[in-house]
Image 1 (tube, rainbow, N blue to C red):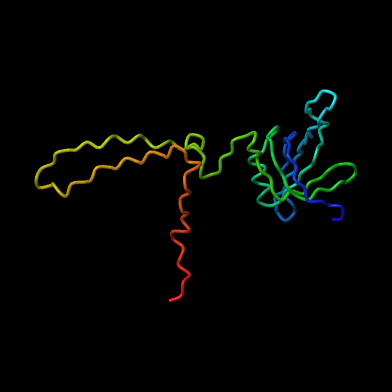
Image 2: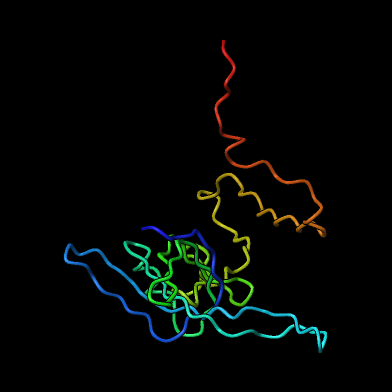
Length: 175
């Protein structure tokens, strides 16, 4: 469409999110983001909230299902896409939508704590106690478990560990 501009908006989801499906079965979601600009008040010498600007966001495909699953009213989000003005209303055809981590903690499937995921946490393991066994069952002695190394105290300044790709990547030298 003409008159579209690539934009990034940051604000809160306002109201309920609508999830529908097109005639071909493609999911489409629509929600409103209230963007509140910050303005500097020279008379008072401080920042204040400006007039809220509603932006109607639309997403399609798998992103629409993810948005419908994750977002609710008042969640802070950051969305990118093509911004268009139609009938004095701002519309954002979103390409990406994410939770604003400045305001929320987000988990992905692999990092979700067991308690929150509905999985029972692993039971604590009992310490290994040597058991005397009859001589006919005795085999080689098992080595004692090695305790995990203590984490470095200043991990931010420590040297980065080589990535898995660097270790397993094949050599590109010719023979």
